[in-house]
Length: 438
Image (tube, rainbow, N blue to C red; front, side, top):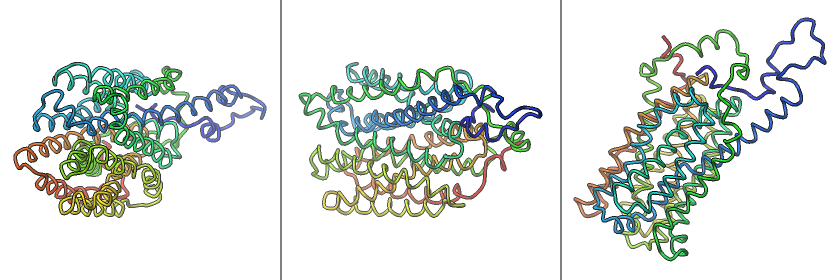
C-alpha cells in the first residue's frame, strides 16, 4: 500500500536531489521530455476517468427511485420487498467496498475502477430484462459491486495523483457524482415516456454512460503504483506511512464511519423513497422525479465549494452543523406540507445531502499518507454502509404498516441529530496515524 500515493512528475522532480557531479543537462528517466509528456498525458486521462466514473456512481440507484412504482408493479413487489431493494445499495457497498484496497494492491486502482465501470454497464443492461425480483436484485448487485469498489478508490486515486489538490479534485468528482445523480433522477421518467412508456427501456439507457467510462482507464491498466513513481518524502513521514494501522483503535475513524453511515442512510432513503413521498402527496410522477433531481443537483455547486472550504478549516464541525440544520428544516416541512412547499423542502434537503462530499473530504484530511487514506476510506465507507442498511428497509416497513409517511419522516429527522454529533467529532483536526499506529 506504500505505493498508493503518487505525485505528478513535476512534484517528484522538484523534490529529487541532484546527484553530485551531475551536470545540469543530465536527463534522468523522470526528467526527460518524453517522460514529462507521458506523465501529463496520463494525468489528463486520470482526470477524465475520474469525472466519467463519478457520473456513474449513482444513476443505477436514482433511476430506479424515479420508476420504483412501475418496477414494483412490473415485478409484483410488496412494499417490504421494495424497501429491501432500496437497502441493497448500502449492503453491496459495505460487502464489496472492503475488498477494494486488496484488489487495488493486486491489480492497481485504475484496473479495479475500469472493471467496476464494466460491471455497472453489464448490470444495468441485464437487470430490466431478467423478469423476476431475484434476478433483478442479482443484476443490481453486480452494478452496485462496481460502484462499491469505485467509491472506495476515488479518494485513493485523488490522493495518489493529486496529493496537493485533494480539496479541489474531491470537489470536482463530487460535482460529477451529483450531476449524474440528478440527471438520472430528472431524465429517467421523460426518457421512459419518450421510449413508449416502457420502464425497462428507461432503466437500461444509463448503461451507455457506464460503458463510456471504461475507456479512459484502459491505457492505465498497467499503472500499479511502481516504486519509482512515489514522491520522495521526509524519512519520519515515510516510516510512519509504512507502519501498520489498527484502524479500529482510532476514535476519529469510528466517528467518521458513523457519520458516513448516517449521511448514507439519509441519502439512500431520499434516493429510494423521496419521489414516492411526493407522488403520494399528490405531486405528478414527472414532477416528483424533478424534485428528486433538485435535491441531487444542489450537490453540483456545493460539492465543489464545500470540500474547498473544508480544507481551509482546522475543524469541519461547523459545516456539519449547518448541513444538519438544513436537513431538520427540510424534514419538518415535508411532514407539515409535503406538496405545498415541495420545492423549498427539496432545496433544503439538497443542501443537507452535501454531507457526502464533506465526508469524502474528511477521509482525505484525516490521514497523512496514501496507504492511510486507503485504509480509512475502506473502513469508513464499508462500516458506514453497513450502518445505513436498515434505514431504507425500515422506512418501507413503517410506510406499509402505518399507511402513510408521518412515521418514516419522523425517523429521518431523528437520525439527523446523531449525524450532527458524530460529524462534529469527526471534524476535529486529528489523523488516524496519531491514534492507530502500533
